[in-house]
Picture 1 (tube, rainbow over the protein chains, first blue to last red):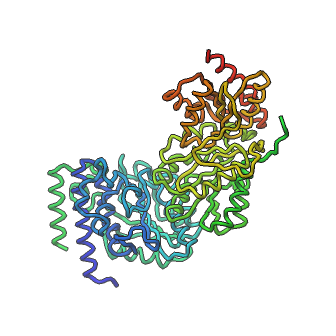
Picture 2 (tube, rainbow over the protein chains, first blue to last red):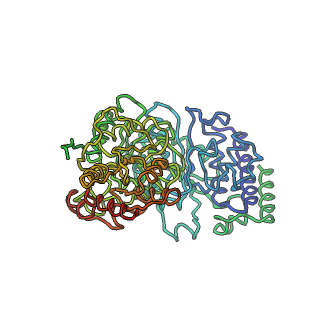
Picture 3 (spheres, rainbow over the protein chains, first blue to last red):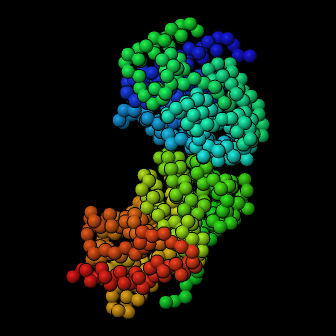
Length: 280
Length: 316
């Protein structure tokens, strides 16, 4: 059982990361707030509870690796890396600026802590499989984590990779779908339905866990179930809300997939997030 | 022309890979359901723990290769050239080249000599689309001896590489087993002053034959084996243009964007001289034997010689 204090601490961290996301994207005047906010709690649990990593030694051989397959959610990962100590929090405001290591989509060569460059959807899970195979070859106990979008599951390569992970019994791999139900053009169910996701992944040979992607205990429990599962990879389908934590983004997620908040919108968002942080 | 030993570059690759597997435990090999054809089968049998068949899924193969490389492995990924370059182009671009990861795409059945399988399987555009990607090194070995050297260099070299190999047996033109291949350096295989033929892959042997034909007419032609298409040996190309005054390129690839395109870019900017490109003239191939196809699509010593005569005429 995880201590209540730890949960409260994680919730506060998630709120802080969300505030960074809003500020960064507003400063950059471009970026993807919706999918960063929906992934905020998952990323918080990974970087501040689950992952075995060292901010001061990003290439430590025994580390767990995290692949952000939905590369447009870069801001939430940058916020987590900064708060974890990979680079100064002040640097976050350089997002998407020329010369910055905080590229629009994550770039492993420009920023230590990024395990794989992504942005062209559908590619991350294959890379995560490769890392999991390498860990097995080198007899490292480290795990590999990969976060996908639900719209991303329309990419064929995702299903090629799904077969690979199951075929090679990669039980050292945990994948997570940030199931926020929206893509750029509309609701995933209307654009090109990916449902039923749990049944699809099960049919592809994965152990599937479904959880509330905004409840810390639920995310932790799902990740621990994955670690205990032997002989097959685990897919956590995390039900999330696009724009989570900012009322007007939650209310109209399609307007904030790839659009930055204005200064007024930023302030309103920060006020809401601060209020929530105090409540927890 | 003297009798030459015949070796398929894919066979030389398979042999080199199996030897390297013994020496370097960090080498991992992936294939996409073509291990018998690409010749990775030798490695697969000798080192089953370090061989992964990815099935008919080239995009996933390239992505998996990137992940293995990110975790420190030296990865050779093989399939046919059409699939490795075309089907998985975006994966090569983002997961392998943008990341500058240590993945060697060693692809076989390049060019029209893939033969009977027909146009869908004949990669005649791969050099163009691979060399357009930043961080990518592109190598087209001329024979079996050079292929072995290239594969050994590839293990030592850190970074993404595209190594283009052929299906049929082709003449061995490197007699010296101590021949030293260097990435990015062309090799003058025959001296000459009237014109230069710059060739890659199996066309180098035909370029040497063309030079022999022209010698009978009193024309002295230099022949350069330009195995590395990228990074290009611009210094050698410019020197050849300045010293011989005319250049012909010969490649088993489209004349658009490949070796001929790369050489034309360098000459256009640095040393414009009469130039001609021998290769596929913006066309798909078809089924046939490799020999028949080479003749039908103008990839012969006679065609190269004809091109040389035409550029020499334009010198005056």
